[in-house]
Length: 443
Image 1 (cartoon, rainbow, N blue to C red):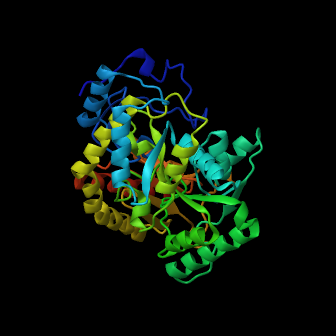
Image 2: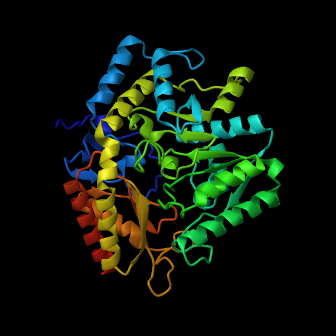
Image 3: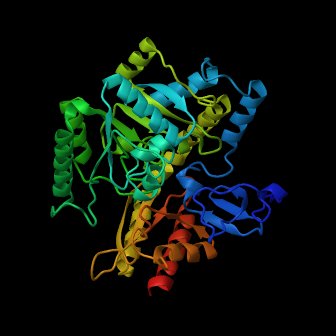
């Protein structure tokens, strides 16, 4: 390993302003990475159990991806997004091959936010309707359009201070832990959540709704999967009321949940999938929309009047081909192999600590949520409380002991989202550090 200590990578002299930045918390400065590990400028090693931003799915130094990028850069580094390119076409075809059968066409973008905005623009044009329904607590991006789709108040409120967001309605998520519904079983909660969604559809007016946009397994809002039967009913409602179903796979896609796309673990076929992050293992920005045959044919017949300069960048598409090679070569299988061990380890932590109200997730995307056992409510809710947040303290202690975990929306939890290349020993190490950090904070 060769640590890079060039001046522009040092936090103390950097001119760049970090995103999600608070002046009271100076972020660490990372200069190297290998597999599931990253290293800071002081050569401290961290087991990266959030894959940076739920995106470095293949690990930090997969040579298959790097070689594909290098080959493309040597051939032709950029081709306009209004032109065709063999690398771009090859990636689109491979994506269509692994997507649900109904999806056949790809409209490339740059980031997850822009992919979601593109999908909504396509849905509104295709249907002639304006409204889009999304979940409360959801996160779909932080640009003006994508933040308007987002149900997380912290993100949406920042945007709405400066721009009116119209044409977006919200429905309650199908939570099982601390559910807004009163069903006694996950199946009952799923049925009630679907009935609530139908009420929202009818109340808004079905003819006014272009699409429902939702993550199949929630990402930063808590890694919760839907109860059994929920997505089957959502698909039925979309068909009944002639509404498009869009699966936001920016986090859930590319092996994160144990299949190519998270919606495939639900056995449901959407009308569109939005993707980003894992498509290149985050080695270079790339995103896009997978669309159904009908929508793809319509786009090809009517044309597209807008675009993005860097959408479908050839080096990004080359990285995508390398990442798909890596996923096919055992990484998605590794998620399936270790998922049971991952779940059992977290359930053991839940049993040992009364402060852990729930663990939930799928594949390599999990949340550990902290709630007071006497009230069932969070110990600290950053939306209404001030002071020290114990969930944040758990993550700080874990980082001091060499493991990086993620935060959720709201920040009452710890999220675990490691690269897909981890092994059983690394999983055991990370869970041991988490266990000890919870013990130190909550006793």
